[in-house]
Length: 558
Image 1 (cartoon, rainbow, N blue to C red):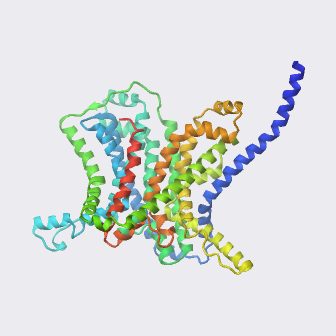
Image 2: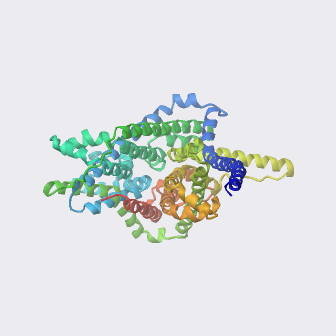
Image 3: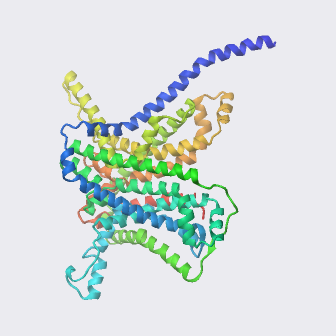
């Protein structure tokens, strides 16, 4: 009986072996093709920048590019310093000190995360300008009539832009450094205290070097969001690379020049990602991960407690309450003007685009991560390149999307003219397909990273058990993996949904004719100094943005 069984199993393994190679090949090929589709805009930008019809690079280098680079560098450095200081100090105080209201501030400090920088810029400009309530009060108290009689800081300036970005982006640093502090060994703090180090010395000499990876991640996200912004810098008249790209393409009609500026932006983004990766790896090698007993948070009383509460309150007031209050005030006084068919139409457009993008990315991320699992490898260079899209500004992604889509439209139109003497026009360019494609390329990292990390936590024995029950790969995914992946899909889809609602640069450049979203509606009216007429749209964006801010707090320890 044993002799008969052996040839049976040998023959079965001989028959099954060739089938594994096609399964592996098909899975890897399908994942690579989808990743290539997401990388195509980045490749298109590089190709157009290196082979433009007219080469404006010498002119850009001699005229505007140095100013763009200087402003971009100054803005990025200023935001990183200010947002990093606010985020790090808040994380340190929340982790190591106990005071009245600590639980409240642990989530309230995330509320500015819901406020897009361009909306805050519009609100504060209206609040602090010459005819606004603040300067009106200053003139009344001082008895002045003309702005020449007193000094008041100019909000529409480079310094004002740094303040706006820092107040809305510091939660990135707060979240990453707080998670890093909670993952560090408490023995580090105890050793510092036993050697007589003061609290600020423990922070600067012990915790900061160990927090390098967490700080690098948080500051990278801050810098990427700063580079992506167009609404704030254009409204404040701060000519950055993003501003120059938009101006070169839409104002001057110079696609080659826009692509070359985009290539500079992409190079900066890749350099930032590389520095973050090197810093993170070095920090991980040097970090001390031995866990000791959990030390209790030091109780703050009296003046020190009051100072911390006042500090946190000031951040929340400046970063959330004042701009939100301005919007609520405008909605209240101009409700009939805001509550219109326009608002519902634009909200419908924004929600439709967000739902489509979430659906596309959830399907793509799940399929690609599962195909990589079937292929037995997670080292796909095209997927890793596609994940760089999150660091590419929306204006760059818009150019990258229009180049291949425009080439496809022109090719199809030319063939139909030759064959049928019929013009097909624009099939994909100038449609919501282009918008969803750009969003998918830009936010793919959020969906794929979440699904991939969750899928790696599912033991391969579950796949083997499903196979023994007769499930094929598709049925295994649907009946075994998807229920386990649902929390990751839900959280990533929520973040992508809000990102699409808030996205302005790519939407401005790719939206179809007469197709406005809430973000573009706010931009158009606020640019014309009519923020009161779009206050409800801006407030809706802020309310939607509060959802992930509250959601993220569920995953952070108090």
